[in-house]
Length: 324
Image (cartoon, rainbow, N blue to C red; front, side, top):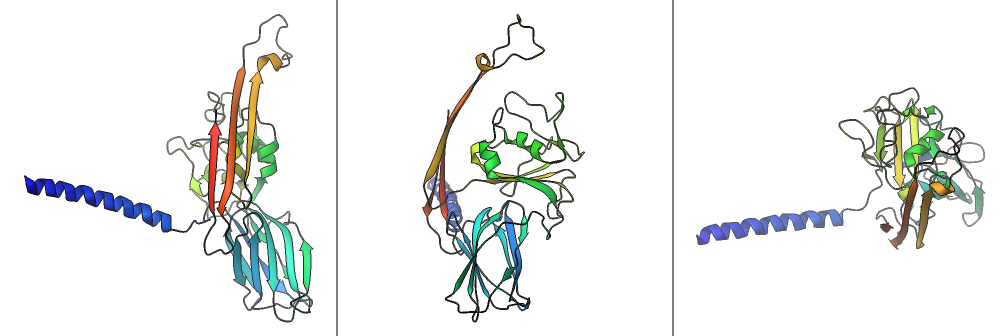
């Protein structure tokens, strides 16, 4: 009897120890950005166009102060893979050349940007400031699509506040039929799929921060993240890179919002009532309109708990969302 109790106690203690070790291993793992990310690459050359090898290239995230370091190879090439979407600043230094600082470089989700940098002969203490914008055409990928940026996601009016409706801004996407199997809005939850580039509504591959968001049965989006949690997303509906695969239709890459070095938050009140609506042209004047009342409110606060200066350790972020 005592031996059975001892074995039971040992078994319980082992399970507890395994759980604690699992939690500890997760907490010690550095945060990664292998999600719906961006890539930056290019060459560093001098005024004559010759490659500048061994140049130090530092990439800094403006919002979080997180930095990535790279060094050009013998051909002057550099690359920064798996970057969180956002605004960046590039600093290039090399002996015998002036320091080059390039700011206002926006990297969108699921994009690959090529930025060639040109150094001028001079002292390293001398600095050249350059303001730039990402090119309109991606030359380093075969994907054809469109990024729905943070300004559009956060500010455009949405009937029901469902981000899937924003896919209609992408060329090749059509308004779904009212009797669509997955595209018809359901019980205030919005549509669960899109019709784009002539593909079926159940052929879209939905990814949120690189994680599969597809229903395994009907291949629809499993849930719609609140619009306030999204930073931006990209819809590739033609000749998308082979790294995605899985579906014959479009690839929707969603990136969620994160913290920064400044505390910030927001709140909203979404109110709908048929008393405020104009009469439909086809409705009879004397016919009573069906009631349509919707009210929702929410508050969100996001903060960066620890400022990070090096890419060796990622910033810790906290997000709190309250919805009524």
